[in-house]
Amino acid sequence: MGTPTFTLKQIFEMNTFLKRGLAMLPLGLAVMSLMTSCKGKDENAGKDSTKVVAKVPTPGDTITLDPNKRYIYLTWDDSPQPPGTNICRRVFQEQGVKATFFGVGFNMFEPSRRRMIDSIRAAYPQFLLANHSFSHGMQDHYKDFYTHPDSAVNDFLHAEQLMKIPVKIIRMPGSNSWVGKDLNKGPNSAKLVRDRLDSMGYKVIGWDLEWNQKPGTKAPLQTPTEMVDAINKRFEQEYTTEPNAIVILSHDRLFGTQQYADSLAKFIQLLKQDPRNVFETIDHYPLVMRK
Ligand SMILES: [Zn+2]
Image 1 (tube, rainbow, N blue to C red):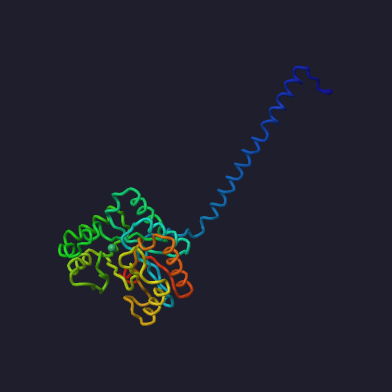
Image 2 (cartoon, rainbow, N blue to C red):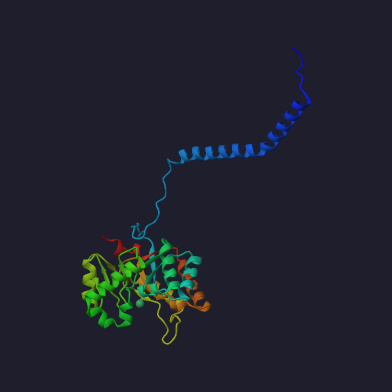
């Protein structure tokens, strides 16, 4: 019994051991803290499993429309047409509104335009990519295009496959045609193609009102106020294809300068002043959702 005695060598070794231990202490604490925090997360994850996980929005999912609202479907054709496409997207994003871009398939052969199409497709639910044919109606030769229904249908299918269009929604080039449940209307010249697309389960969407191109320019014809007045008038007169819903057609190329980007922003700001107005993508248009 008695106080233990150590040799000088033993004291030196103990001292070294303690020093090393102290040096390792911060690392040890860090590892312990990490283990504790991981454990904490696991415990929370167990508790979170009772929560409802939000469903990822998928193009073509149906939604319930509010009968007290006025739904506005901004549908821009011939996409992509830079720089207008990028500017329109920026304005829509800044304003926080949804829109649909009807893409043309031959753009997929140009890498920068292909990236724009890919990026529009990936931007759902704010933006929807839909089908405006591969050849834009054989490069605007609509008469030839619509008198050959087999090749016209193949043209749409080719565009769908090439651009990976996520919905069976078509805008026919140069033709204000509509196809859906109990509806098949538009110019007679395009009827054969409409009937074929109808039998294949496609929805064809025309337009109620166009924000036109000023002849001989790449500028919009109407002012934002004129467009908003025309939209209000259509709603008031119930002169739209579907009640409480209006399809607006325009083109990316009209908004390629700051001046017209400002016009587009003003147009949206004016519409947003009416709390009844809601902007939606065309997969949420009544005719498209009606089975
Ligand atoms: Zn077009």
